[in-house]
Image (cartoon, rainbow, N blue to C red):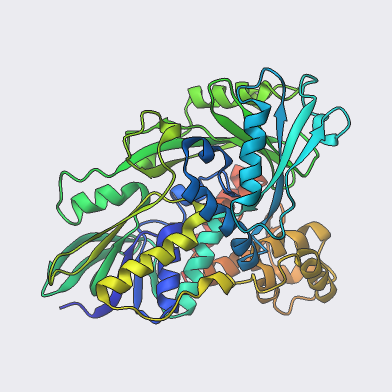
Length: 504
């Protein structure tokens, strides 16, 4: 018999797994979660980082998904105004554009009116000969449509869900692989291995939730022994980051002749993020890398719009991830549904299993609520839906209160440069004061590893957010990897190797 008995055991530490764990423990269930790597180390940190309705999904008649996504934008913004904020998108248009002006107008009208917009401004039409948004673009784009969506620090949203779940009593286990799961006497018996220490553990649970993302079928096949399982279609999406292409705070939505779209988005103050691609992927998700073909595609697609072309040598960073879309039989990768599918298994007295397929950042909270409905039906309901009015850690300030939070932090810590104060509030919100503690000068923040990454922040990430390696800090908890040299990153890795793992 295992030592640990839980109501729910969640496999997967991406946005869906962490969201379900947080919602469930907040309703009074006992919850454990195992993630074989670091949080958000797969799909959930490889997104285009948008909280958006999915304007292009209207073309595939996914009205339910778009409406739910549109309604979620302002709910999530209010939940986490430090890591989520509004972003205006400029959609340039010329007479040769693949989509007609009336079709774009219709789509944007639906976008404005399908769901719940209160704080975000509506669509407008721009004269690109006069508007600053036209400056970096080619002259043929004399007109554009502008609409609202949102930006999110995707990996931080995942780890903050995990942090809040742990604070509410969930057992959160990163770097813990589920080796096997079997049904016995109405319970799940789960064997896990700590991939750092090699320690093996046994757990029992009344219900199992498989939210392993790209590995969801792999878990079904390996842990459960269902060798024929095939439910997900893996679609690769890749992004490039280049030095800043434009000074405008707005993002661009570019339509390509092949009917696909890409975004060009202001990124981390000094850069521009361009993506994404859509192509089927059949290899191991852990090996996913941007291909030369994708690199050329993104450079060429962006160069169709920008006066100054985007060249491969301009790229400072790339990232690529595999989206685990539910396999609905669509012929093209970009047409496969972005909606989520929840499948409950377990007949009679068999311990129930919930498999989670698909989903996207914007709908993770609603996916979690729907998962809790199925969990309640399977093992008995507890509590009521609660997350819509909640805050993620550090997000307990006014939805439009970012500037006030920055001013407040600078009043208390007058030695902080404006850029550092802004970055700390963007990452940690009201928790920035916990990170800074009693510091009265910049030297109190300890060693500077590069950029503006100080020892105090690294210590906070180890103690509170399960960071263990330099990669966890530089590419998921922050994006300081864009500013540190290889030598500085190696120095940080050596420093962290000597630190005890402390988050719990």
